[in-house]
Image (cartoon, rainbow, N blue to C red; front, side, top):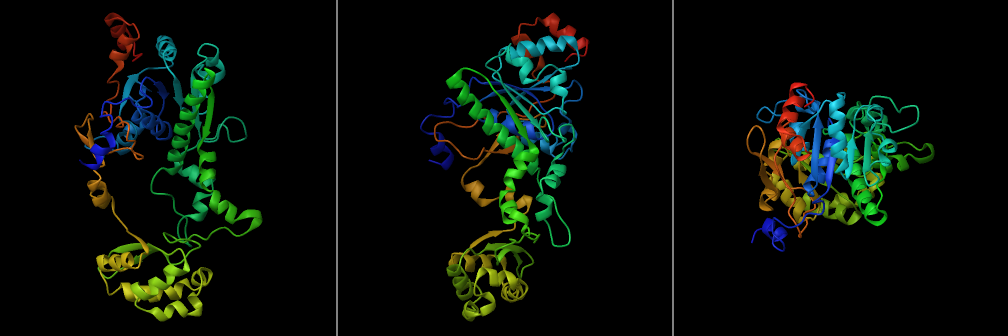
Length: 407
């Protein structure tokens, strides 16, 4: 029995998922809200994604790297239904009312104030839909001087202080993925799960106000406390750890890089003996403690590189494993697609898309009781007609709405 089979053996792939029967309506674009709702869809929720007719979620046009599809869109939008709807049209408001009447959750990350202008604030909806959970995702949140300020991922990385501690000594650097969006999306996801549990006890919906800034500031807790009460912040140190050494990337003789991390003095002694084959360095006063090694990191780096420069990546990693020193390869995206651990654990599945089958990673935190939902990436408006008919619209009504540009 494979690892994947073990994870679903007790109940089978058709087992009840935790969010089966939950309907989510999402007015979403870009990354934060779509990333949140994709997690909900993974757990079985029906996610109806409302998009602008002819245009759709603007993330559809970010690039065309996946057989003509956008890499961002493919990543964050599988297992959803796409309904095109011009929300400024009066007829669209009726469609939305019908949708909300059978929905459990409304998620939106429209421009600041846009949802309220459409009559979709929690206050406006609560009386008509008392069980509805409304999740607003924004850059800075309601109230305060930044309420209407535009917020994109890189801007929030900057505003939250992330850039001040990331990069080299000479220049800050952004993260290589949309971490501000991901942070807000994951807090929205977990908050919605909490709100669903609360509704199960009280019978009432609630309002969730999730901001990218506050999500990122929470993640900045270590450097903020490190710089508490006016103390100096951690220094930017590239891919190396700012306060522990040696901990970071090192070049090796075959032209590649490896990553290693020492955590304590026992590991330092083993590193000197088994990796560097220089046991006397363990007694060198310059390197006798982590603060001393950080202070003399340049001298220690030279000594390490002298040894590593004569070895291949596999030889260095073997020595580190033998010494029980934490290590990793500095992988490219191609390396990750072909990662042996992911392959051995059978973590890839195929999902449908308008461009044909695509590989997708099984969601982390596999549950033994059910298999995550992994349906296709929707084409723009792919489900519009089916959803409208489900809401009671006739074929003639659907044709009229299409002709009027409502869908």
